[in-house]
Length: 432
Image (cartoon, rainbow, N blue to C red; front, side, top):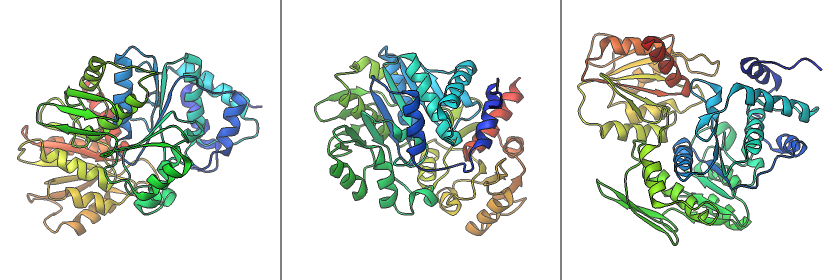
C-alpha cells in the first residue's frame, strides 16, 4: 500500500492519473464502493440533469432552502477556480481537510475497484454530506444521467432542465436518444420533473413505463409574467407576485418554475414560505452564467458551449441595450458544435479574440479563427470594423480585447469553463 497524499492538490493529481479512462460510463463500480461505505441519506435527495440550466437550477434550489433555514449540501461540476467549489455545505465550499479525509475513506473502501476522477469525487461528496447530517442534498449530474455516477442515488425528486444536442459521442446524436439518457435519473413512484417545454417522447415514455410521477412544464406546472413580476402555478400550489431571479437571462423563469415544482413536490418534508422563495430568488448567485461584471467596459462571463446555450447568450446580449462594439473572448473544446455556436452569435460580435485552451481536447485558436472566417465573410484578420485574432491563452485574448474596447463597449467571454476561468484568474491577479 503506497502512502496516501496529504494535500488536496496531490490527491487530485493522483485521481487524474489513477483510472485508464477520463469518462467511464456505468454504475456497477461506484455502486459497489458506495455499498461498501454504507452511504445512504434519510433526508430528501434532489438530482438535477439536463443539457443547459443545471447549474442555475441547483443554485436557486440551494439558496431558497438555505433561506428557509434548512441545512443543505450541493454537489456541482466542473469548478471554475478551485476544486472545493464542487461541494458546498450550507452555502460554503468544503475545506481541504474534509475532502482529504473523505478521499482516504474511499481509498480504504474501494479495494481493487478502479474509479474515475468524477466517480471518486462524487463518492466524496456523498460521504461529506452524509457525515454532516443535512436536511436536503442536491446533486448535479455530470454527463447524461442513466450511467452518470450521481445516478447510484435514488432521487426523491429528479429534474431534467432541458434536452439539447451535446456530448453526442456518449449520449447519442438526437434529442430523443439524449432524452432517454437524461430520464435515467427518474425513479418509480418518485417525482420526475421536466422543464423542457418540448419534451422528447422518449423521456415521457420512460417516465410512464417505470411509473415515475411525471410533472411536465405546461401540463403540471407553468408560469406567467409581465415586466415587473411573475406567477407560478403548480398542481395544487400557486406562488404569486414573485420577483425575477437575480440570475440574468431569458430562460431563468423556466429553471425557476422547475425549482418551484420540486419544492411543491417536497412541501410536506421541506416546507418553504413565500418569503423564503422571494428572498432566495432575489439573492441567488452563480459565477459564469451570464454574469455581468461591474465596471466599464462591461464584461459578461458565460460558460455557453453548445448551440442551445449560445442562442440564449445571443438573446441575453440583445436584451442589454446599445453598445457601440462587442468583443468576444472565445475558446472551445474540439468535440463541440463550434459552427452551431458561431451561427447564433456571428452578427452580434464585432471583434473576435479566440484562444487556445490548456487541454489536449481543446480546439486551437487557429482552428476557431478558420471556422469564423469560413462562417462570416465580413470578418478580416486586422484593420477593419470586424476582426478575428487568435491568442495562446484566455488571459492574452482578454487583455487584447480590454486594450481595444472603449468604455461604452462590451466584452463577452464565453465557450468552455476554461475560457471563463482563465479570464477570472487574469482579473483576480490584475486586481491584487
